[in-house]
Amino acid sequence: MNKTYITTAIPYVNGVPHIGHAMDYCLADVYARYRRLLGDEVKFQAGVDEHGNKIFQKAHDLGIPVEEYVAENAKKFREFVEKLKASYTDFIRTTDIEHERRCQEIWRRLSDHIYKAKYEGWYCSGCERFITQKEYDENNGVCPDHQKPYEKLVEENYYLRISDFKDKIRAAIEADEMLILPEFRKKEVLKLLEESPDVSVSRSTEQLTWGVPVPGDESQVMYVWIDALSNYITVLGYPDNDISEWWPAAAQFVGKDILRFHAIIWPAMLIGLGLPLPRVLVSHGFVLADGQKMSKSIGNVVDPIEVLDKHGLDAFRYYFLRHIDTFNDSDFTWEKFEKAYNNELANDLGNLVQRLATMACKNNVKLDTEPEIKFDAEYVKLMDEFEFSRAFDYAWEKVQNINKRIDDEKPWMLAKNGETEKLQECLKSLTIDLLNANYMLSPFMPEVTEKIFEIFAGEIEPPATPLFPKQ
Ligand code: MSP
Image (tube, rainbow, N blue to C red; front, side):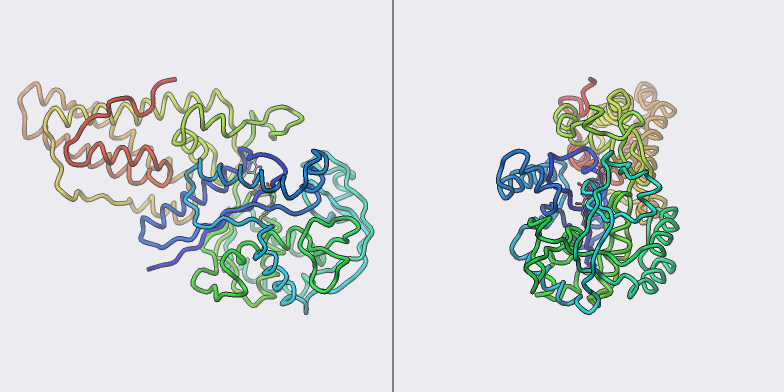
């Protein structure tokens, strides 16, 4: 059996789950479900990033012990992943003792590539990132993502010698051995790689105590990204276990803002450890609120729990996986969401199932015991290229075509004219088409597609209540 390992970015727990966090989980889940349907055994990691200044500061501001604060929020994230029905197999917290111990071992194994030097430069605690002078100048000293001035840092730190790995990373990216998707991000990454200085990989405990201690140096804790990136392999048991049955990951899902860490620091660490690079880095776009970045200060943050509670899981996944483009920024507005719900989910799919199941039931349609249900080649191609929103479009077109076929073939006329055999054939063939479309929709909308399969299994029975009641 083919083994497939899929990972998601681990969010910082300095707040409650955000609509953007849903993207990693939903996209990774689509892939996990798709691979399982192809027969793979899937390991699917999710988790939370609990260290760093940002989190420590937040807990401090709230007057809550940091351990308590992260535990509370970690729980909310886990509940969120479950609410999204993301079929994860492993959930990691970076404060897990085992993770910390393994991170320290990873550090030891990288020590040939680590040296101590003085850092004098800029830092953004919003990004938890060291900023080059060039970037500082370009942004006039203010982080465009967090609208906060960069902080001046002067401290002794450990550095990871990125220059030891640049050639190998570049070659792997250029040869698509570590495939970066979408393609247009590849160039950006190669440019960043060329410009990348050695990376500071620790912070002085005078500045930060909330992190994994650097082995053998009590004055330093690890830079949060070293600890966070390691999660993808510590969760597999590295370095205690042989992880080769799962590693390299088949796909790692990350937002476009954090691709740079995954395409430069992460491969450097892996090469330093003698491990292979992930096969694919899938970098998704951002969910915008009416064209703008969602932010607390603008007051346009959409609460994912509200969307889920109001309209249910399938409607949530429908919008975020189809109308939010897999690779590009896309908009969320309640108006767009509700329009998609009523016109597409309720009309195209909900009504179709109701209509077809009613006719099939009334005319006693029986399918063969094992009707042939399969993915179309075009769908497989799109899914294999991680073009999920386009694969979803493809499956949806199938749904619309069935509606069109019903209108064209008018089964009710066949019934009226007593053309029983033709009627049976027509309804059977429409039902098989629907089951095939439903199968292609199933990685995207796990609940409703399961219901639809039940409706058409054995004695066909129309649903007692609409699948998507109009709102
Ligand atoms: N802790 C780091 C990730 C470490 S991975 C080893 C981090 N956390 S985060 O909470 O800031 O972001 C987590 C994920 O959510 C990232 O993939 C990020 O791109 C994604 N999103 C956060 N806001 C988003 C949108 N508005 N839209 C889509 N995804 C965005 O970075």
